[in-house]
Length: 116
Image (tube, rainbow, N blue to C red; front, side):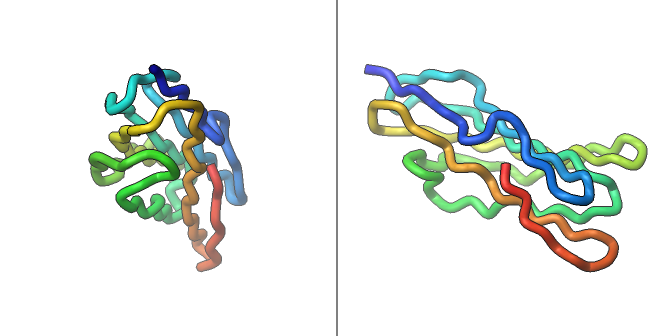
């Protein structure tokens, strides 16, 4: 029996100032217990400080097997911060991966939540 993965946001969410959060998985269907690579990408101005979501032992119905530290790549005035998370699931059916919540803080000191 298989598991169908559904991202709550495979597209993107944007907040001022120009912060975009996108998510993806390495495949749309897996068998029970198979590893799933879930990637969170945040594109933002270099002047905006980003705090990636805190990950617990579970993410919705999924178990967090492993997650590394976020990595940032700068291209001019824009940064791309990426975090890979290894998930698994032990139940069958269609399941949603909850959208990540990223904190963005501008140079004015104001913070905003950006939902993926």
